[in-house]
Structures are given as C-alpha cells and as structure tokens.
Image 1 (tube, one colour):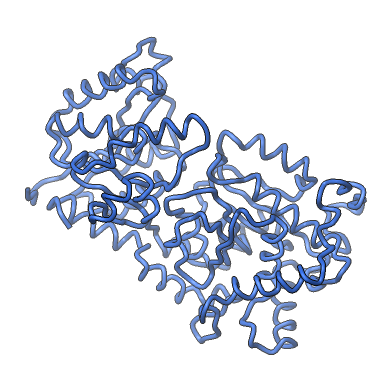
Image 2: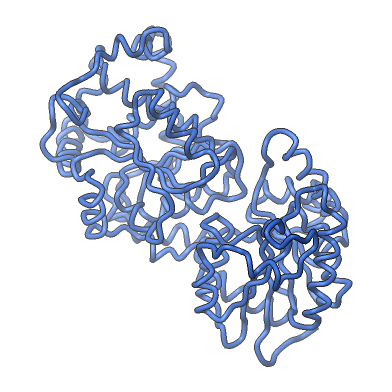
Length: 496
C-alpha cells in the first residue's frame, strides 16, 4: 500500500513518557522527522484507580493522569497523548475492553501502530489490526526480563509474538532483543528487522567548555569521575556498580603494594544519572559500603549530554539490555566504557568499549577501571613518556592533590571499617593472581589490533579523537538523522 500524500500519523505505544531508553530514542527520532509528512502520537498507560472505573476511556484517564517528562515536548512537536488503563495481569478483560473502545473511537486516524511495550503487544496490536489499522509493528527494545513472577508473566504474555503473522512487522534494537522477544524461528527466517537505538551523535560529541562548566557546578573540578546513566531498576545492576566503585576506592585508599601510585591522593566520585524504584535502596547500600560521600545521585536531567562531558570513565554492568543508548552516548562523548558482556555486542562499536562478565569479581572490575584510567595509550609506547603524559593529563583533571582523598582531614580507619567485609583482603593478591590478572588486562585491553595510535585517534585525548569516534558510530548505524530518513520512507511507503 502506497501513501504519498498529506500527513501520516503514527501511534507509538509505551508504558509512559518518562526518561527511559525507549522514550528518549523515540523522541530523538521524532525531533528529526519531517513533520510536514510524518507526525507521532503516543498511547501510554496509567492506573485507573483515580477514575473509580475498571475500564475507563482515554479521556477519563487523561483527566487524572499526572504529566510525564516528555509531555510538553510531544505537544510542542504537534503530537497527541492518549491513555490506556495500566495492565496488571488480573484485569485482562477490562484492558481488552478499553483497547477496543479506544480504536473504535479513533478509527482511521493512524496508518501505523508501533508497540514498544512488548509485554502486552500481543494483546493491543491484534485489536488495532482488527479495527482497521493498516500496519502493526512490535518493537523489541530489551533482551531480558525481570526476575521472579513479573518476568515469568512477561514471557507468557509475549509468547504469541513468536508466531509468524502476529504482527505485520517485527523490529528489534539488537539481535539479542530479537531472539529474546520474537524467538529463534522468526529471527532465523528473517522476519525481524534490526534497527539500532540511534542518537543525535553531534549532540553528545565531546565539548571541553561544557565539561568545565558542569564539573565546577558539581564540585568535581579536581576529581576523577566514574559515570553511569540508567534508571534504578533490576536490569541496571546498581548494587554491583556500587560494589565495584567501593572496590576502586579501597584499592586506591589502601594501596600497600604501590600498584597505583600515579593515582594516589586523587579525589574520586561516582556520578549516577537516573531515577527509579531502587534508588533509595542504593543510597542505603552506598552508606553501608562507606562510599556515600563519594557518590552523586543526580536524578534525571534534561541536559544529560552535558553530564557525559563531566565524566572521565563510564561503567555499565547491566544484567540484560536490548541495546543501551547510554553506552552509545558515552562513546560519542569520548569516554572509555567498561560494559557487562550480558549487554548486546552491537554496542561495542569503537575502541572505547571493553566488555567483562558480571560473574567476575567486583575487584576485577575495579582493577580494570583503574588500569584503563592509568593506561591512556597502547602497550607498545615508551613507558617514561607515557607516565609523564599521564601525569599531565591527570593533573589537568584533578588539580592539586590532597594527601587524603576524603573530603575532610578526618580520614577514617579503613582497616577497622573493612574488617570481615571482604575489602580487608582486597590488596593481597598472590603472585599467581597477579600474573593471571595482568594477562586478563592485556586480553581485554588489546583485542586484536583495536588499540592503536593514529593521527585520528588517541584514547587519552577526547578532543582529538572526537571526529574519528563519531564517524565510527555513524557507520555502525547509530546516527538518528540517517535513521529518521530511513523510517520516514518506511512510514510513507509501508516497506523499506
């Protein structure tokens, strides 16, 4: 079916319009669309409790729904927002009734219904198709499910999507997401199209001026900043992130073996962007690990791109992901990234990424981070010249160093704090462990010929490397401007 006239409207189905990965990626696409031709609308979910009805209409829900993060942006771009009652499993009849009523009231308004909420896509997409929507799409953006009953329920309600013909099109942000949601059969016969989570690459490119302004604002002008961006929920594995950071702190605080003398006396901070149901638990864990004074829980930020500039390193130990845009954003900003190997390998698009198992010890992650911070060039370089260059780089980051990396002169007795916690043996590697770790670091740091010195790329120089890194990400399909043109054609013509 060809549509070459007028304005085509696309309905995106989501859980909400907060600062989540899917929402951010769709909004990036929306901003880059030719909106004279293509216009987006959004169908979100909200608890029906305040309406006093089990199956309220969209208008009734919108009257009680609290505005979400992207509401104003959608309206400014010309989009509309509609609402369904939140699905909780036991209200399946009421949920179906609300969907049927919704599409009956809006018959003929959308050419495409694109469901990013795949947990219930097998319910709302067939109803949309029966109501006359020409094209239905299930869009997989996650390669796993939460633990426990919720995860089992998600798998059950998703299972019809693994049958051919359940939808007109199946999209996935990565191969892992495709296999997870649509199954091996549909993936193997080519019934799933892989569309990477693309970003506005130029918006995240390294900017020294923004870096200096924000670091001053955060009070980290003379600190090494390890960063993370992600909502506080099970998949993101914040408890492991905090444990890794605690290990980094202990390794530097109590470096009796003088392995990391070049980093001695430096302030170090963990900067985390995001909100979520586990945030308060993670603040308590930071306090328990005695790192609360070094952790910055920044929440959601409209200028998230500036925060990547303020970081010096990016750590992302997720349990599962579809294709995390935050790791692409971090690379665009020129940050070295240590990423869980549970994350889809498509995100490993530049020399800046190393991948490591979350089944490894937290101290091994910590040592890898410190190793990366210390080694800003390839292993074949002259050690003395590299140490001089590294000293200059770190001094530029941190300024004059304090004798203690704590904020006050009241340095706690770390040996007493760490007694019987596992941290008390952190720096006591056997010779065999030391050799094994050295070999692991070399393997992870130098996969094939990835680490190299060139005119375009130098791992310690974000300004010099920016153009090279951005081009690599663009060639890997992560440029939202190019992706917007591709999807505009699809929305107009119904095929690629």
